[in-house]
Image (cartoon, rainbow, N blue to C red; front, side, top):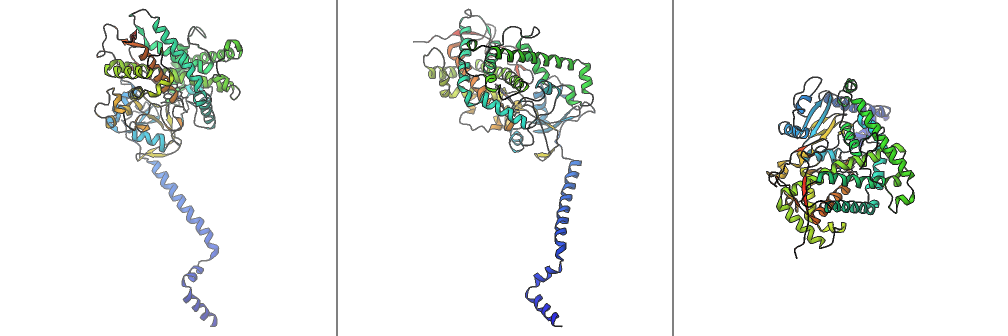
Length: 516
Ligand code: HEM
């Protein structure tokens, strides 16, 4: 009785406490665990059920086995076909090459999401037979999956090759090679045409080789009667992919039947023999033969890297620089020649900044604001058409669509640079002034990609293009051969993974004479 009264009094003073004490305390812990487990299982099931019927991006209807292969082989270049498809299916679209899904991104806004928001899960490179063999089992920077090894190699590439520590060596090499090229133009017979494309390719190959291995390997046959150009051209083809990359189960057999596997082995063997020769010669070169030049890439990295790592890095430097930088420089010259107004304004700027010195000095470039716009406008219209292929490592959503693991991502940089929604109706016109006072978001033009896998040599490449253009337009006036004028100059493009001119650019150099 007394106990009842005490209990009643307690209930009146602390009703809530007492209710709580009715719940046995030993049950509290299991209850919390149960509650969390339920929430976890519910979330997992929801995720699973949404993955069972994911909301995939739209895209053209595909056929069994071959997927959309038949549509992309429609005769035009891949970037053009996919740009046209994007008008119908939108800026994010799904296609299949064989059984392999590819998401194609065709707007700067969505490129922004891939390169910035989801860079942490969309930055892998897919595995591929060609990549694996030609990079000495993924020892390189460009084609190796995003792992600790790739991080180490990218860091070495930046600090020992493309970073500020190497600026002086880079400028000396560039200056000396450009001057050699200008001398060869001067010694040309009066009024004769030169194939400028060949000349610029020689320049870039020599610059890359001298920075990387301290010596030019452009001329002569190197291994099994092949020149460096032949080895590099074959390398580009073999890195573009094979049937086994898109038909995993039968592709390897098909590649064998069509001779691709043998061709890959031959390409690897030529590349390896060339790089072995370069490394052996580098070690054997005596101090006096090497002169007083600064450390090249081999000198800088030999103690930090294995022989295969070193070879794969050299491959990235030479293969990554020659086609991309040559194409951009030649497109710039083509656009300048085609637009006499731009040429006049550009030469006016260059000549007033340099004064009457015999040649352009690297330090003059900083004042050339119009030249910088010309280079940017060239890269807007003529970038490598796709960024290097990426692969999704875990599920994410872009623009409300599910992107499933192992899907490959292609960003159509060529289309983004010509998108009339950003660049207006005259998007395809060459007009450097459009970039004046314009804060171009990095993703509105993505010639060098973005995020963790962006081009680590973007500044170096831009400096090469700017200095080369300034030098050739300072020292020479350029004329088209007789039958061609700026209006009928052929600007047709072709090629993959770098888009080049279909017809080489041939011009007549005339030594500039100053009017007093
Ligand atoms: C105009 C010249 C060049 C252009 C337009 C260009 C463009 C690109 C692009 C689009 C990528 C892929 C970026 C991405 O996936 O987001 C890339 C990656 C790369 N580029 Fe360049 N590039 C140029 C010059 C060079 C040069 C001169 C070198 C070497 C000396 C170089 C070395 C590389 C390497 C190593 C990568 C791979 C980076 C990685 O995966 O971590 N590039 N470049």
